[in-house]
Length: 110
Image (cartoon, rainbow, N blue to C red; front, side, top):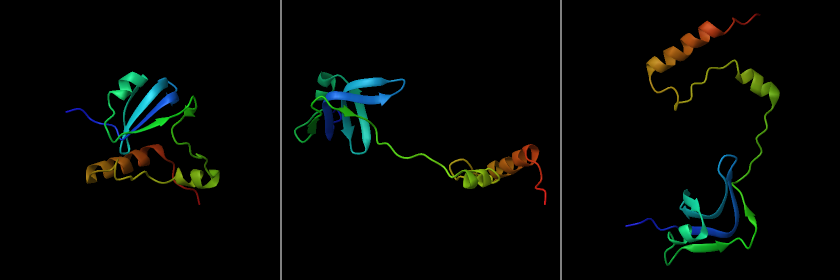
């Protein structure tokens, strides 16, 4: 059984990224991009309840957001250890992070 798209974007240019360039059509299932390619390739992923959005020659791009920083907060943050739970998954990983910081950072003057 093949996967059926919830939404198809077609009839325009779809920006995929610097390396990937443009696609003619895009298939989406929930919050996941299923595939990109030609209109006929993506039409094969449509089912009876698929919403087909005709871009009418317009451009579709990924969501854009403002990626700026406040330099003072950014600079102060560089003094902290990155203890993100996706990165630090064990006590050993925590101790390794602290040991690396001890080797590469200077003591604060004060």
